[in-house]
Amino acid sequence: MKPTTWSNWSGSVQCSPLGVLLPASEEEIIQIINRATTEGKKIRVVGSGHSFSNLVETNDYIVSLDNLRGIISIDKGKQEVTVKAGTKIKEFGNLLFENGLAQENLGDIDVQSLAGAISTGTHGTGTSFGNLSTQLTAIKFINGKGEVIFCSDSENQQLFKAAQVSLGTLGIITELTFKAIPAYKLEFTSGKESLDEVLNNYERYNRENRNFEFYWFPGTNIVQTKFSNASDLPAKEYGTANYITDMLLENHAFGALSKITHWFPKASKSIAQISAKAVSTSHKINWSHKVYALPRLVKFHEMEYNIPIENFKDVKREVQKAFDKHKFDVHFPTENRFVKGDDIWLSPAFERESAYIAFHVYKPNPYKEYFKVMEDICLGVGGRPHWGKMHTRTGIDFEKLYPKWNDFQAARQEMDPEGIFLSPYMQQICGEAISMNR
Image (tube, rainbow, N blue to C red):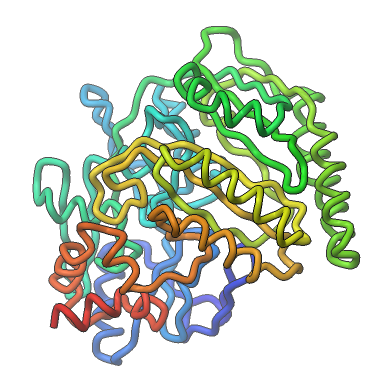
């Protein structure tokens, strides 16, 4: 058992659980669930603690998946890989590569556990690709009754749709089976354009590129564009130019500038302009798992919303107007990505082609007013918050935002009738549906 304090990556969520438990087997997980049930305590599960919302927070027991790591089996005929739930994304990428395989798409951070990433609907970018949960073909977990549950795209299919994005409320995930593809290389390029250019061309950029995203620097008309496409060219080692861009400019220099905004908030606009002007052209070719993710050394708060892709341009203009009106002391760029719709019950991309807009604030700086204004803009077009990012929504909101919300709650109640996985925060998230269904 680890010391009884816990904090997420950014330090925005802290709690004092009775213990941080590290089971190494399903048998140990069942013992923990039975113990918590006997004691009348709650359990929340942590992967890597990279969520900004209060998903893990509890004063009872936290279960860490760190001792459940590694590949269990590979079916090369089906190109399916079964892996322990606590395996980190970066670790999984390396293991897949050793076997000539890869995930079809990833986000821009690879430190999360696989279970945490799929449980919160983590995503990358590219209109041909869904979030990471769409790559799953099977899930194994221990429910709130201590039962071992298996569901897949061909067995217990309705439960599988609930389990693909479950917020840790159905049970403790132990194994995941992913559909992989042959290992591939990506050619990555980044550059600088105007916001006007990108908003006029983003649909074409999405059509013509495997992966497209961009960062808009608030208070400017400058964006950093990022494109990735499959390549047969030789992989290039991480060069000096890429190190300067990824580490020195986007981390160390940006971190130093961010500190200035904490002491002198009104310098934020100038810092954003300096950062925007510093955007340079970058180019690299490497195996996919080495291209998607970038280091994140500067800590921040983050809110991210999924919106229908057809509303994207109008929403971006509203965001731009809000910056001009409120003159927020924010220098962090907004991140803009695009994701294919899916049929996963609690996926923010459920039944719609989607755009995601992420809003960031340097950790020591105030963020609530800024996030509130931007959240209201996104909610105006039926926006759904990223489960692992900050937001102010509760169960009564989600019932309106998710057509399968009540079906999910019914599955949750069947898997966890005593609510052992419902911390006070999760009761707020699920609360309205709980009281309605009882």
